[in-house]
Amino acid sequence: MADDKRQKGIALTRRLFEGANTGGSGPMPEALTNYTMEHLFGDVWQQDDLTVQERSLITCTILVALNRANEQRVHFVGAKNLGIPRSTIEGMLTHAAHYAGWPCAATASGVLNEVWPAES
Image 1 (tube, one colour):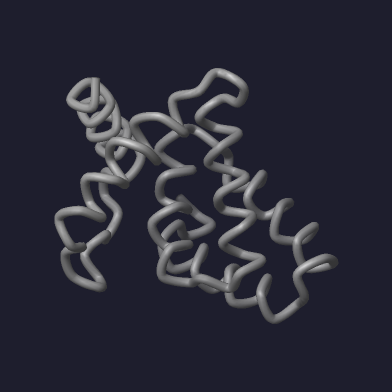
Image 2 (cartoon, one colour; image 1 turned 90 degrees about the horizontal axis):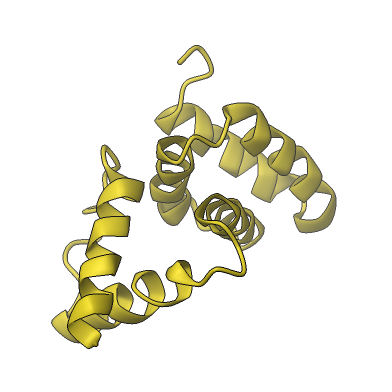
């Protein structure tokens, strides 16, 4: 069963993060990588209570609120790969600014422009 979850996790991360620079902090320890693939992407992201697109947008929103620019880079690319329109991410940033603060939204806007230029 863990093998099946791991394979699902690997397939999803390939779909999500194709073209994203995921190596900025170097490789994770093997145990953390396994847990990430099997549990997070192989189980949590596979549940049918939310779509993958909804999970992606929620994840992006949380990363904005936490001001996690490195992870935003990866997950904004993931949102694009899943077909979430840039305008949806922009709307989320405007909304998040009112709850998480302007500095968080401004940082995320810079990250979005870096990985997903407005003209693309």
